[in-house]
Length: 508
Ligand SMILES: Nc1ncnc2c1ncn2[C@@H]1O[C@H](COP(=O)(O)OP(=O)(O)OP(=O)(O)O)[C@@H](O)[C@H]1O
Ligand SMILES: [Mg+2]
Image 1: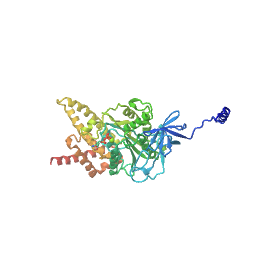
Image 2 (image 1 turned 90 degrees about the vertical axis):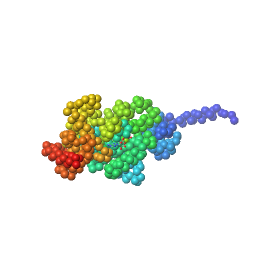
Image 3 (image 1 turned 135 degrees about the vertical axis):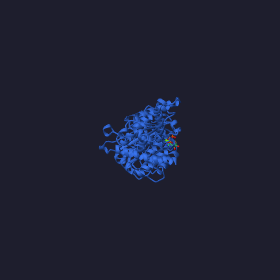
Image 4 (image 1 turned 45 degrees about the vertical axis):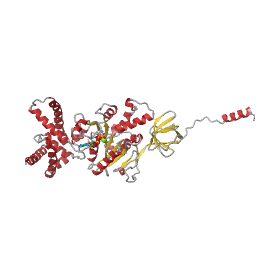
């Protein structure tokens, strides 16, 4: 068949005339590539960073990388059903999670789904996982104590409601133990708790859940958010923001919340993994350039709110794991600079049996002092001084075996007893009034003539003795929260009479 040139050109002319040059953005995009919980999506030019994207099969993703033609998105949950060519729609929203008191006592995943087998969570409230931190005028200075029930912390590194205090140390040095004890100690207070487990083994999280339930600090009190080690990095990345949103909701309702992020090292590693898969340029230690912002925007949301906003508070205890005590690595220095102080746990102390292994020499709390009750402030002063002198002397005494002068010997003896008093078992949280009594006894020298190995027994007996026979001292401390000359005299007398009883029992 012959081809007629005019006919072809006629068709072409018609086609060209009918061509509408308007560029239209399709309301949906297309998956170009998918794998490792990361999808590259073509189209969706209007999508914003952090926006929630909806995939054809109902899966959700978050737009992370906005490039000229494509979007790099992190898929939440399972990505196996998503295929190249699938449609993707933007939702105009950012990710939200369920919040509200119905979550108390529950264990949820990073998306807010219950994972404790206790049925659905009855709540209609939701909150976006990202939220701007309160501004300076919206805040108030930290002034109410958040008692952890741990003597070494409450006396020397006091934490106030609304503070951010880092718990930092090598692996297996008791970091989680301190945070969990702090939660247990909120049992009888008006402070709610959120524990976020990031990248931990499932059995470790289960142990924390069991321990909290057994201590009576889970039901009606604590929410557990868990993204365990076997979940995708996107879930690990989301978990702390989810926990933060839950805590934030309570804070804006005028309540008090303690939130633990266990731990942010694993969070940073998950974010690094996501960023490398998104082909973002790696920076120091292969972390992306905005890894500081990852944690600062999270921790800035902890605050003590101004009265006009209800006066609620969110206290944050982020945890960081170090390698061989190296606090100068990238992520530790970042988080140290974002927080208001750090509780430093030392491996050597832990193995010497000084547990909690808090290195009181280098641990600090920059704002909690103003939240400490007066009585504790009174006893913490001499305690700090005695311990500092003890540390200096102990190092020296190890070197020179020569005779030490009497004063040095006394200081060493005092220090050894104080160190013993600061040892505390896990889940053995102590009300601040009792802490004051025993620290008063120790710093006033009442324990100097008790053998170091008997100190623990003395302490336990003494607390029982005070509770049984000196309810007035206990009551006055609870009510007035300060030490008067009169109360000191009563305490001195109580200590003396118990000591006589104790020593008589020893010698008998
Ligand atoms: N005050 C304490 N007294 C006695 N044992 C303790 C104390 N604190 C922690 N431990 C024990 O030390 C071990 C390590 O504690 P924990 O799990 O809290 O450490 P971690 O630093 O969180 O460890 P990881 O790095 O694995 O997360 C646990 O077996 C715990 O029971
Ligand atoms: Mg731990």
